[in-house]
Image (cartoon, rainbow, N blue to C red; front, top):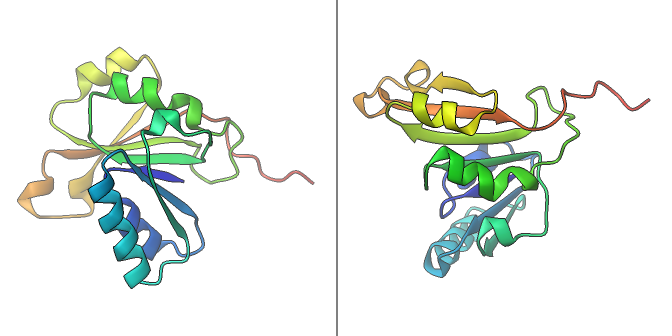
Length: 147
């Protein structure tokens, strides 16, 4: 899984899911140095940090998780080729994007089937009232088993 945005949401996810592998990516060196330092201090063995633009990475991932860094159409252009097509997870491989506001226009612009989840379902604080997780499935439906 690749997470973009200076380590967040990657660090909390790496703590919550110690059996998953996280590649934290940001183009800003200072953010990645802090992220690397936090991962080392917390002894997170499931985290790798890289200073690079995500579109320049030669890798593919089950999921790309990011906080809002641009519009959905721009982010999709940068990342859709980085998602593995074969899914072995209960959630279809794709992009998980954290963003606030009215997202109807952006979701319509991407022309992809997407799902919107209201974060206030899990967090009651006022800050989360206008925040969403957008799931853009880009892989095939989960594969039950190869055998």
